[in-house]
Image 1: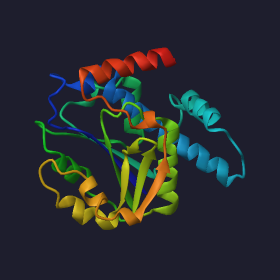
Image 2: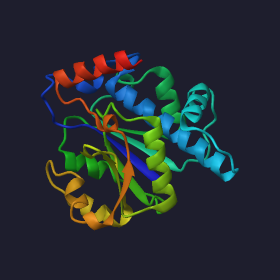
Image 3: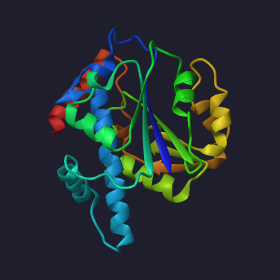
Length: 238
């Protein structure tokens, strides 16, 4: 199994407000991220089933199928866990349909009373790991550039190969979600303050398995200017 931890309980204040609750089309920033993760999980399962049956299917066609089925599909046996660590209840971020499907998929929502350091978010995300969970990934809650296709590729490789580290890489650099093999969990739990998983990741650059993604996949929104620029971009794109 693979666990994906969505980190949404940080101490960043550059926005002057909760950036994860900012509007994003028909939801919020965090709502968009969660919805894309759910699509990615279902897309990975669709592609895995297609491959096992010897079928060929374009990613775009598979994603369209997932979007059509998402509201009414019966979740299969879980191979991917979704854990969200945040300061507010899910109703503040998610639409009713997204929340319903998140719960049906076995998603776990951990609400903390106040902003916490990054290392503490990681420790919460690492709680109660099952023995069958071999990989744990960490994704910032404001990474609006993620796509279902890109996540499905990460999930599939993590499940199939369980490398030491699975690292999304674009032409502009390294990004998230980085997946860590469970053998590194003890090192992750020892991090302090605002230390993140990259401190562990960069101890072992020779052990990386790289997953190619588009540059936009790594886009997050740290400032009002970045948020507005991204909203302008997606409106022109769509």
